[in-house]
Length: 451
Image (tube, rainbow, N blue to C red; front, side, top):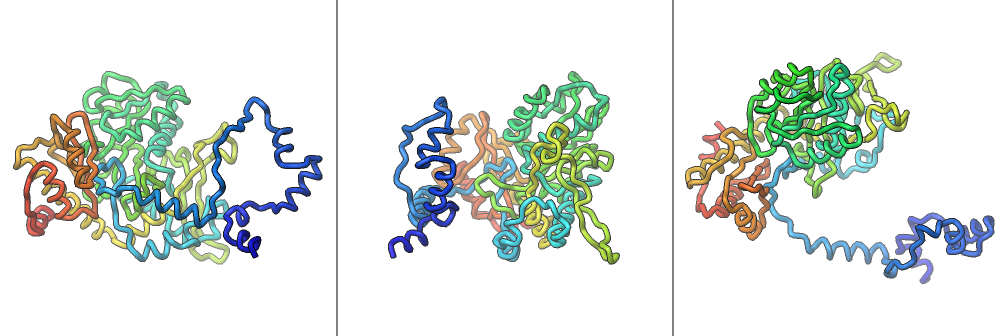
C-alpha cells in the first residue's frame, strides 16, 4: 500500500519515465552496475562537481504548499510604472474559453497550421487589427515581445536597405529602457553601432541605416514624428516606430507620419501583466518588405471545394530551415496571446476600444490638471496615458507611494505615472495623496474631459 501511495503522490514517479527495473536493464546492457558508475565514466572530470547541498525531494503537494507560502510573501502593489506593461481587464468569456482552454493554450508552432482554421481566423483578425491601428500595409502573426520586435525591425531595415552602407542605428533617447537593452545586445553581435541621442535635434549630424523612436515616448510625450521621418528618409534610412495600440485608437497613425516599420506590444488588449511576460508583440510594415518581415503571415485562400480557407501564406526563413541564412533566429510567435488580443478587440469593437482610450486619457488629464493646479510641474503638456512629474526629490515620492502600496516609475528628476483601463477615480485620489493633495473627484469632471 505504501508503494502504491508513493506512485500516486510522488511527482517523479509520474513524470520521470523509466522504472527502477528499466534503469537496471539499460545499465546492464551498457555494462554498468549503477547510475553513479555510468556518470563517472561519461562525465569529464573537469566539470564534475559533488558538493551540491541538495535537500530531500518534496512531493508535488508539499512543493505546491511551499510555493504558496513563498508567494504569500509577495506584496502586490498597484502598478503605475508603465513602460509597456499595464493592468487590463480580461473579458470573462475570453479568459474562460481561450486563456484557460487547453485546446488553445497547449498549441505549439503551427507547422501544419491549416488543420486549425479557427486559430488562423483569430490570427488574421490580429493582423488586421494591427494594420488598422498602425495604418501599415501588412502585419505578421505576432513576435516574442516588444524589445525583441525592435531588434528584429533593426535587422529587417538592414536587409531591406542594402544601398545604405552605414552600420549605425540611431535610437531616440526617450525609448523604453528594456527595448534599448535588447537592441544593444543584438547589435553587438552583428557589428552594428548603436547611437542614442535626441531624434528631433541630432539626426542631420549623423549617418545611420535606421532610426528608432517611441510614440508616445517612454516618458509619455505625444508628438508629431513627421519631421523625423523626413530627415530619416533624406539620409536614405528607414524609420522604426515603437507604438502603443490603445493610444493609436486616438492618435494619428505612424504610417501617416512616414513610418517604415511599426512594432509594439499587444499586452494591454486583455492580456494580464504576468509579472512581465509573456506577451505578444506585433510588427507591421509596407508591402514591399513582406519578404523581409520575420515570423508568419496568415492569409485567405480556397480549399479543394472552393470554400474560403485560411492558410499560412508566408513563413520567412528561420533557424529550423538554414540557420546561417535565417531571416530570424528567434523563431518565436505568441499565438495564444495574439489571439487573446484579437478577441479582446473583437469583443469591444472599434467604438469600445476608443471609449476605453478616451477614459484612460481623461483620467490622465484629470491627474495632470490637479497636479499643476497645486504647483507641480510636468515635463510634457501633450500625453496619452503617462505623465512625468518633475521633482527635486523623486526618491521620497517613490517611498511615499510604496507606503500606500503603489509603484511609480523613478527618474533622476521626477516620477512617471502611467494609467490604464483599470484605473478609477479613487485611484487618482490616492495618487494625488502622495503629493499631499486632498481631492474629491467626481464622474462629471471625468466626463467633461472625455467629452
